[in-house]
Length: 184
Image (tube, rainbow, N blue to C red; front, side, top):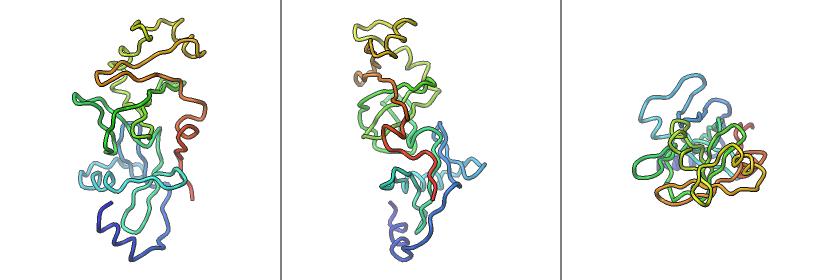
């Protein structure tokens, strides 16, 4: 966190938190109520001061005040870049460990122990990299066998192979303790 933010927290330790004002959408864009935030300085401030509390709620520390973030899908959004993954808000992008597919066809990856929704604009290219362990593209019967747990699928990325698993019931909330809609 920024030094000036830490100093403000020390000066005013009991400022009430804010809920319902800030949202992170499924493409990594910040929204303040119904307005998309486009100012690079504000977006950069949010990125640097974004954190998770002990209850699984994500927030931006705005001076002495925590502004809790409503998450459309996950606390991070991942997009493919030529050099690897980019996360929004920025986080040191380690090598992903796992890939999950939910019932709505959304692809998630786990990076650094955190769930990240894969940007939907990257899905078309990535779906062609989902194969069986012997390198075959799954057909409809293969996808059904995978859903029943009878077939193993993997995401073959240039930086390594990720096992593809169905996202358990409860999604990122149940699997990672993420609170998508924090409340006081």
